[in-house]
Image (tube, rainbow, N blue to C red; front, side, top):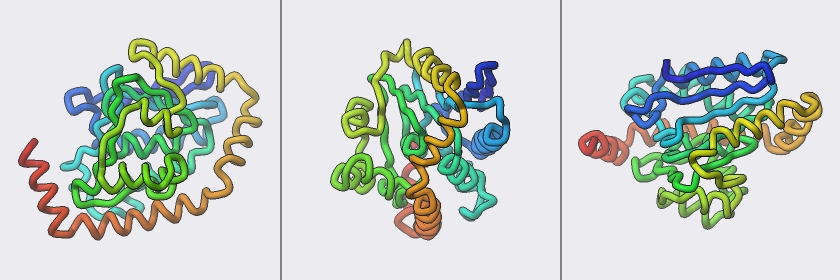
Length: 247
């Protein structure tokens, strides 16, 4: 089991990435589990809030690249694509608890979470250009809105890493929580949210997301087209070969 799924009577569903030997790198099976869990949570009235987390040392180091590349074209059958669209349109509150590494999708996923709490030593990065690739998960739209254009360019063009403190300063992270308290803190926030009148919470999230929900879907699609084209480029192939050689 690489995603631990726990449903509490309170209405909190917790999805825990459990692949520590690979720094919680997401393989296709994990993406399928996450998507199925969100789809089920979308339908089940007993689920009020979803928490996604890693462990006390690592959120996720991003895609398991070898597994990702084996899945073929980035169409609607691709597990990663299915997850991106599901997370971006998920109607219920989604809370992230981030500790340690949050690389690639580990950072862009946070743009679709309603609340994000992180440990002090967390390291976030979107190293797409370093691999000859482009942004995904509508990060090219959402990050400039949150962080401002120049800071978004710093992280998406240069692919520079940043700390949870920096993420909190520009608004990607709500609060910094001591690592040993993080998971309990997020669980308590989720319980608080689940105890509120659910219809009021759902409608409030829908209102927050409505102005650009269609645009987010459109940008995800355009990014995927560019991403697919770049994957087959010589520059990307060289960068990926160098990455696997280092590994």
